[in-house]
Image (tube, rainbow, N blue to C red; front, top):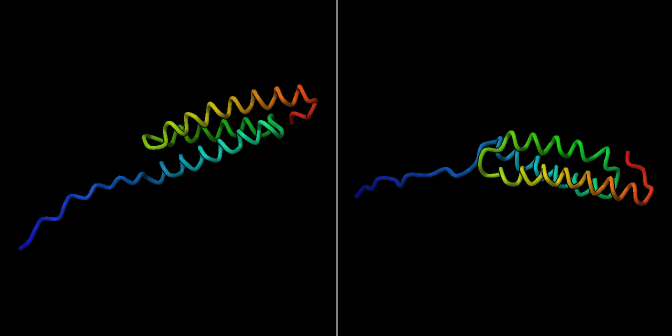
Length: 91
């Protein structure tokens, strides 16, 4: 007896999707670090990396990339506030 093979659905993302997820994770990490250490140096790069992740993501990591952009902005705002209030250097 022969049976037809079941249709195989490839649910893996493309290489761009994988790169978008990785870039979003890197951006989130840089945003958290920017809250505590040199926000003017780290936060703009975190936001740029997050925007690149948004441009690359199409489905799977789209919300993660959008969250990374918001976290970059919050990292800059919180980091600048903490640096000014504690008289630490901002850059």
